[in-house]
Image 1 (spheres, one colour):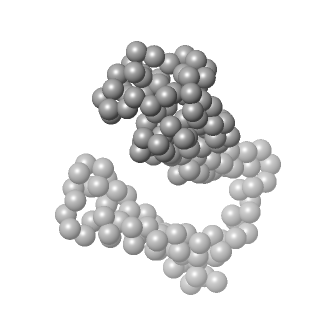
Image 2 (image 1 turned 60 degrees about the horizontal axis):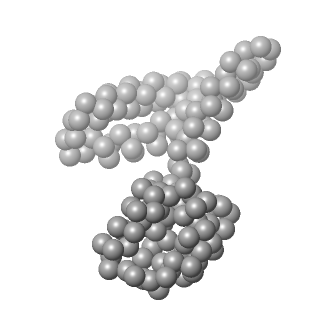
Length: 163
């Protein structure tokens, strides 16, 4: 167990130092050929080294989770994990954002005039948008059907209504 503890601790310290150096370099725009790839692979090695370190020091590790120290350790971890999950699940563009949820599905089933009124849209701006696309179609059909008939994307119509 002593050798495992020595290896785990040493490997964690060394990989941390390498990750820190390469991370600072990447932060300041140093992109010399292999730095990004090395940073990623050393990061993976650090995860493994850290797990070995935790296993080798399990009894001491559990001591951190006794008493009032538990909340001070767990709370930041939960916050960081929550922020990470939130940031990786949020849509990256406006089109994906519109497509989320029941409100979108209900909105695109409304006729264009009703949706315009519900959104408090700019009718003149919307008319200009339609004219720029060469569209003179009736607006008493659903947004979904209107978009399909005019070869537009639903979110384009919704964005044009809101401008």
